[in-house]
Length: 448
Ligand SMILES: Cc1cc2nc3c(=O)[nH]c(=O)nc-3n(C[C@H](O)[C@H](O)[C@H](O)COP(=O)(O)O)c2cc1C
Image 1 (cartoon, rainbow, N blue to C red):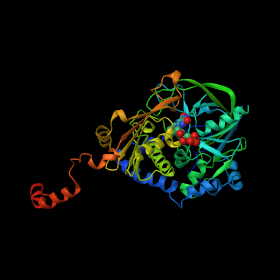
Image 2: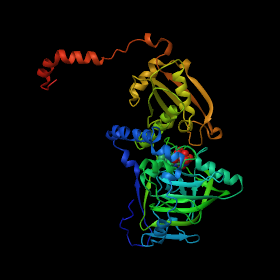
Image 3: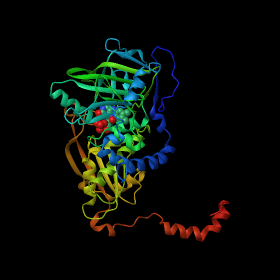
Image 4: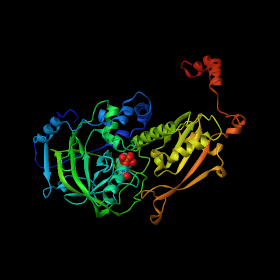
């Protein structure tokens, strides 16, 4: 798909197939691999210097924009063998086999693994976020953006000026663009810059003639359109990542489509959330854990040894592992993790543990919480950033929720006197192995 040399079917009748990215994450045996592979990638490219992402932060054009290379645009827009274009009054999205992903979904969702591309009207920077997109007839889609997300902030600025908000939506693109689209890339940095930084080469984009917005050059399908103030239609319910249809049906802004571009028989991708733990949220846990770890280090918290958002709780349950260095270190880590950009939205429990705890093992975390924390010391933060997807908040009170800060580290002031752990130490294990090696070999028939 990337090299542009794919064979295209010649049929003119629109059809499409869907691939769900979730299948990549089903096998738990891959867990260790994914964790060991992706977290270093995120950390390498996001924190450590020198790294392309830092450079991209300084100059998004270095990696993010090929700046609409004229030749490429001409090539793609002229490539009618590969692409079909339809414009206002002639658009028929309903002709594509767009799925209803969950039994109780309120409609067919073309966008779950998509990019919604907007531009800040004041500052000019481009955002590409993954937000769900529901079909609303032949030439319209409804868009749900949670409060505080960048695409929603752009839209608000246009609407406050009484202007329509231009938007591009891309479907069926490079998997890395999806990963970037659902990552909390720092504000004012384009996801294309982020992805370009990770790939170490620019993302190829073409110029959307109706909106002036960039369109990923090798997307299977893209639309250009606009959101207009007050133009809303019912959106939802949808089976959301917490495992419920919590946000129900609400009026949400509609995108009126101006142009539709697609390859013949386009392949669209989907990532419909499922009740945890379907293992399908692994990539999200990995990404967000790394971003919170970055944010802690950027805020100057020393000796962070790990961050893990277990897929069952995901944003609702953050586990931070530290090597305690000073009084208040654990509380500092917890409060920053609870309020930094990647950790602040829809959090609930923040647990800090010592560096002898395996944060990827829920048994270990529950043991630490049960034996090192006291409920009377749990701090509660109120009126924090939540939203319609929070199933524990009644509909009339949605918007805010609370946070529990659970310090499950050994109390700093008497950590040296804390009861010793009665597990077999590595030294004692080695001594026993040595002492009984011959006997064990004789009994088990295997060399020890
Ligand atoms: C499959 C999938 C679907 C998502 N759907 C939505 C959505 O409908 N609305 C939303 O606000 N965020 C959604 N998200 C989360 C955002 O993509 C994520 O918060 C991202 O960082 C938002 O981009 P932004 O930081 O540029 O606003 C989804 C994430 C995934 C992985």
